[in-house]
Image (tube, rainbow, N blue to C red):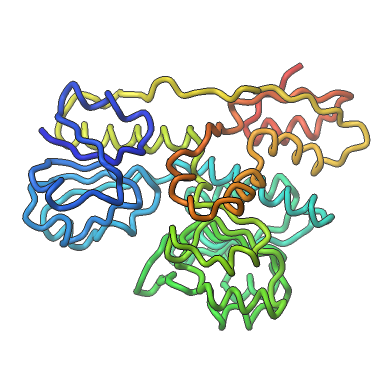
Length: 375
């Protein structure tokens, strides 16, 4: 069998070669001639899987090693006998790490306490649920908005977007990009949204660039309708709005989910999916050789420090969001290259924290996040 794979999917090379002829290509350059005689594809978001690419091919299975799947015309694929799968939750812990680094960095940089602040989490799937847990650990007030879950589950766990617009000090988005329908998210953060805000909330978007109307966002920033903005995703990537870039407080090149752990999970799920579909016998395959950071242990003297400061030191040791912000601003024209050559980033479980002079509360929270507590 023949498989076409994005050449930037980590840990994949060598996994399928014993059972298939695998060709690796840049995701954005995969064309019809490349896939016309392929049986399967393993892709990322840069490959648009639609009729233009797939019609007349013999592709039977598409695996995207990503949570999102708006780059796949699922309706067309299903109508033409092509099975597809995404990798739900594969990088949710990575995005949690990104959001927590963002929140703590913002709080320290702007001298405010997260405890007691109200955060609105819009989209409470794999990622949003983890953000909810983190914010509860930080003793924040949490408002959850997820209309599909609200309809399915009932009860009062979820609130309206209107309530979030009225009460939230911070709003973070973790929704899929739905172009149409009852739960359309295409540019649903627009002038109407901004004009109805009762506070000047922090805005964080790490979902999809197109859920926010960029022009409306620039106007809201200019008018002071919102507070600091953190963007990991942008309209028209990689050709992002440079004016918007310089107006936001933290800017990164769509790497929130780019921990090696998250990438390995996405690759694992893709290989398992293809193996199951074609009965290839690779259902137990695991990525090998995942690099570890140069430094994996941190000592923190907690004397005189708040829980927030302790968490800030530990979390930014594992991942400092400002490093990615700096790289993007210094070389905005290498947006895609920065994603394709992203450095080693591991999640909390790869790090050990040793607290000097005690603080049981901090140990408990760090353990809950996933850090190893050293004695």
